[in-house]
Length: 224
Image (cartoon, rainbow, N blue to C red; front, side, top):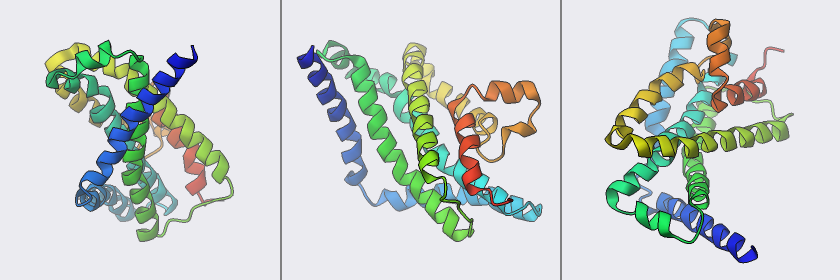
């Protein structure tokens, strides 16, 4: 039992290490990986400005833009990963390895969290500084707890979707593209989902990002 646990922990850390080391493989791309998504987020901020929306709403966009980094990592580096491994011939090695496939997927999730956090934290910090968004640090511990729970649920969803993408075969790429934009809308990355009718808001709350973003936004809301 102990040896099995150690084996799975080592497999998990080894799989996470690959993705963490990959961040340093080509540092030249990090500025582009941060600045280009920030341009897209800034577009929504300027739209809010043109509509004379209160300043606190800018934080909704910046926070949503940071969370998009994790969602894209879920789609392209978690959900579709087993499909790409099958295409490259590595999938049989995963299944015949003496460790659990879940430990490999958890390792992918941990490494993906670190890689996506580089982009997400950079977008969050630059967005706050550029658009001068006030942040309430009085509930920092609860915000970090909510953020951690959201990531665990989100990457758990990615682990579940990996089986769906693996079964979909060549349609995995199209499935990932299909899910990308609808999740942007129904998870409320750029606005609270309560603007939707009740039934749509209820269905949207089944996604981890929806509840996580709604719980995190009070830390950026200075209307009180």
